[in-house]
Length: 267
Image (cartoon, rainbow, N blue to C red; front, side, top):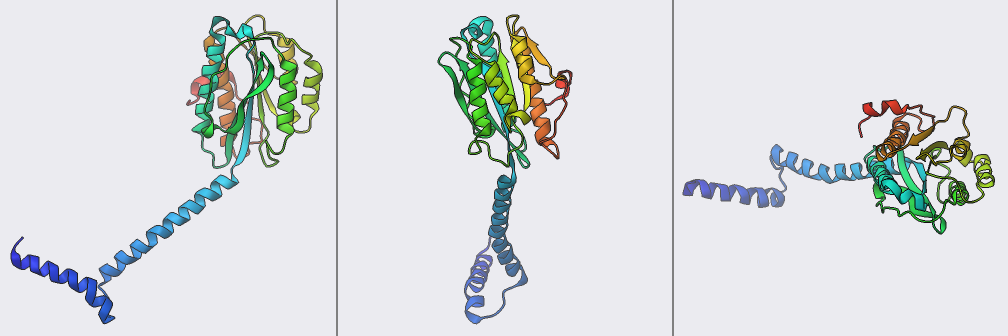
């Protein structure tokens, strides 16, 4: 750049910065356009923020609650490890779902040593940090039924605007406590009775009578798993069914998905 050109640039900048403002004149059209664009940018960002907040406030919770048998027998043959991996994968997939209409929330109730307890509190899947479960003790399934009924009926935990929940029962044995009374209360409760239910029996010792009673549906199917791969396939079936519901125009509708369709689903 020559000296004359340099001086010309200096003068031009001084005129733009000082003359137009002090003289009360109008700057060139290009300068006006730049100012308008600069002023519009924050306004557009504000509008996008408001739109995002509106979307989040209108999305309704879609609860998924897993009742997981963590009795001592689950420690054999890698069953508890396979269960942990399957639930972790399910939570990760739910976290990646579009939540503009339905926001998938996840909770896990573990029943084994010490009774039934909330292993993972109900919260949006994208906010859930999965902590593996450990297996020990007996199979207090009746306590798990009582706990999940209390959770579903509590409108502070699951608000009235939430979509109907999905309950998933997983066990590899026979309940060691009274389960018939608690299950009857669960199935006749106002909100829990409307839940979509899935059940999986792991291994040959699983009590299919209890699992079938939990489904309370003549067309319901107890998924049988005899190896780790089948445990993961069951949870992929649950994941596909819930995700399909969340993507539908009416997430409260019953979506009939066959396990044979797993290969067509993008996990």
